[in-house]
Image (cartoon, rainbow, N blue to C red; front, side):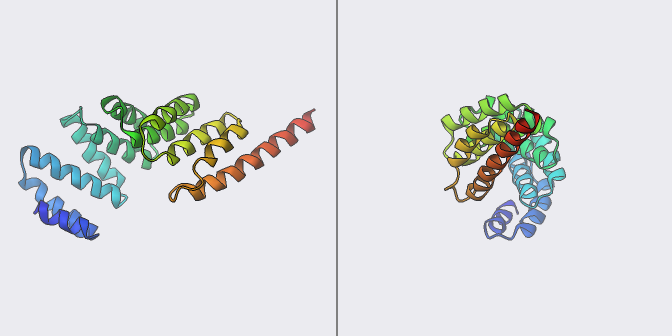
Length: 194
């Protein structure tokens, strides 16, 4: 049943795949059960049912605490639920377990920004840039940290590194304009106080 669910998932029929994973889970044991549970959890993430994905990956992280992907997916679930304080330790553990996990560094930086730990976000982005294949999201997270530290020119230089990325380019271009506007506003306030 799990094999059939994967076929449906690969064909883009996520609802049918999820139904089959749910039916297959009670029938499986051992490693097979963990694999099916992980696939079901990822299906919940794809369908944006983050409460269910968080519950699944919490169980998986407890069952296999040394598996970075379980920690990463639990972190994603918490991030999407806006439970940023819960997301941070999951991403921290993921990069501790797998130092080459570029996506985990990106989401760790994003989570640090959400809990106002901007310098830690910058450090996570820098470490991620050393190992990640896809770098635009890391530059955007770094740029956002610099914005919060009111270092607008530096933020622009980070966002500029993402403008040609198909996924992050539009966001980066908007953020560049935002930095310019924020800098002008800050300068106007200084002149008025001045």
